[in-house]
Length: 519
Image (cartoon, rainbow, N blue to C red; front, side, top):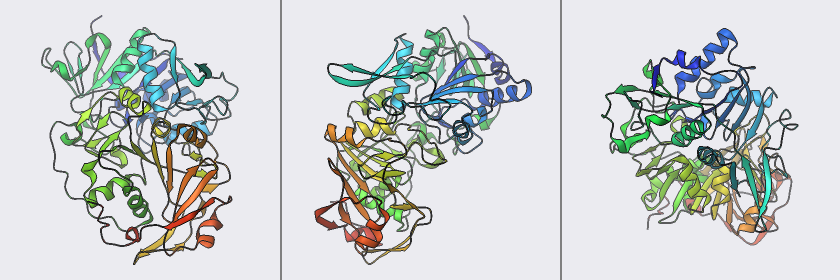
């Protein structure tokens, strides 16, 4: 069948009740924003379509008015299978309010599942998630009370006396994909996108199930005009093409209209990075940067771990490592905020399922990730805490299969004020929330699994550094100027192991001058 060209409104009319809709998109990158806007408009005007199931491996959203926030209407969505919900707060509020059924899957599992469905395989077998809330012996990825009575989607199996998880295929009826150009025949290129994502895997999964693939592009060019090496989707994988009606639907990311340095089309000046003030976040970033090794392949999580990169740039050691982003990027400077998921001047871009397979296979040497909660056993929670439901994203893929894991976060939260000068740290005001607890609300990182894997795990805060042991977390460093009892142990409901060789954190961390990490 020849590819048809439609408006976004016409394309939105195609989606029926009870359809399973898959989408690519990492925040705003590669996302077909106008298609979901028109799907929302159709529902608000007519009440149709109803009871959709959403599938996504990354995180389409950003703020409250982008991505899958548009689909957060009771009756429009019935069920979701996704990795990360935090950038679509309207959608995750529906999960918290028990309005929809929700399963959380690791990003690599979801991306690879699309690829397996493209070959009509029954699902995927993976060790990713063992010992975490994904494991059916714990929560089975069920994210609210409404989901608990539903089928156990994730199954525990044993292969050669080793436990694995089986994730069943979820057939795709419709796919929304964002891209750059279509030619008149319907071939699709992505040269202005910030990553390759899982566009090909989603399209193949949809077509293998007899579904319809709808691609939103910036513009149409003549047949034969596209470089075949830049064509991500052959026309045989595409049913409909929609040309974006406005530049606001042609943005590279939520924050950036267009920067050729993010798409790798041109090398752009990186500019100088102004030294960051000596905050708690920078202190943590400095201690983390001291762990970077020349030649390491590294992943940095969002938030405080980004300061590891900023410090590495400031200290002149960033080029000694290869930074990666889970959506498929090697090299360059990973971007933050609403540009997260892109990298300035990347060296290579591969499909997201392949990058996450690289992670799952132990390809990373080091990772630096955040934490919302840490318990005495060394378990970490980032996926569900109080009224916040980010989901696991790529966190489990990254943390479970990397041999050196560094969790970076403040010791307390909500109001913490510190002062660092002359090589010492002083706590001026404690945060209202102690982040170290008796038991995490949800296990996103399993200390037991890490110990069995022989991983090295450190927990870095502005005032103390802990190490994972088979007996729990061990305090191995304390900041100069900090009182052990008053500033550390008093804010821990459990008593950690205290190293017999308890050290002071390097005093250089707590001065305004560069630390001199460059050898």
